[in-house]
Image 1: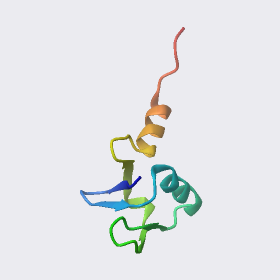
Image 2: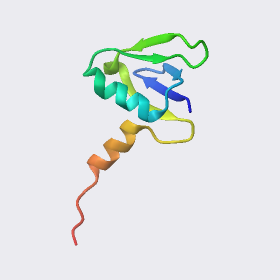
Image 3: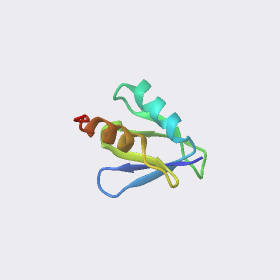
Length: 78
């Protein structure tokens, strides 16, 4: 499934990799530009992770949004 990457500002990029593959590339990159496959052309594109705000597959929450919401949960007071 294609993934839409959202950047600072309003720019977006659709890549062929699914959300998990984008997450893996992001983690392997260690802050360096990561190479992904442009959805339409099939060409390799490189993105600067510091400019990415989030990414999501069609109809799903992004990995970053999901991780941030998990980190922000308050502990239960039971």
